[in-house]
Amino acid sequence: IKINPEWETATLPEVAELNKSSVEPVKHFGDTSFTYIDVSSVENNATGVIDMNNEINTKDAPSRARRVIGVGDTLISTVRPNLRAFAYVRSLPEKSLASTGFAILTPKINRIVPEYLYYSVTMDAYVDQLVAKMGKGAYPSVNTNDLNQSHIPLPPIEIQRDIVAELEAEQELVNANKKLIEIYQQKIKSKIAEIWGE
Image 1 (cartoon, helix red, strand yellow):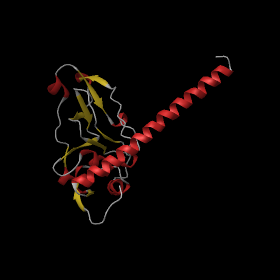
Image 2 (cartoon, rainbow, N blue to C red):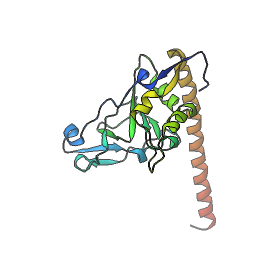
Image 3 (cartoon, rainbow, N blue to C red):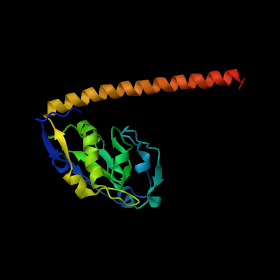
Image 4 (tube, helix red, strand yellow):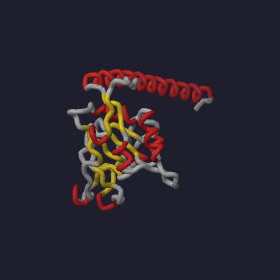
């Protein structure tokens, strides 16, 4: 995102609710299974890819399985945020919870476009704010107060939409190229197998 110095800036609480709701799995879902999204379920480097195949029973749920999430939310890993295990929730199984290792950002849609919020927190300028607050222990992390003090550029809604449209188009191109690479890698493997008579 190319920042215009004339844009206003906003702190995170001004544009999003942070960790809107937390529940206990058994009380919330009963004795059943649900999709659990922990930090390892989200790829690093802000690819936005979420593995939603981790289904567990509520009675076996770890103590961290508490965060209520919804479509349109942004997930930020508060542990080692420099690795950018961040994701935008585009779709979700009906019964889902995320780890308390995430900060769940629910956008205030009268102020910010949900996808723009996600792209904003993946920027170097934003991540650098978190890294500056990150502790130096075995699990360097940030807390709610650190996030509340962080800020992002906030252009008018129409400009936010334009930025999102441009970035989404670029992401589609990246995804298409990834698919093309996979196809050619498979062709190479098949050719090698053919040469070796496998």
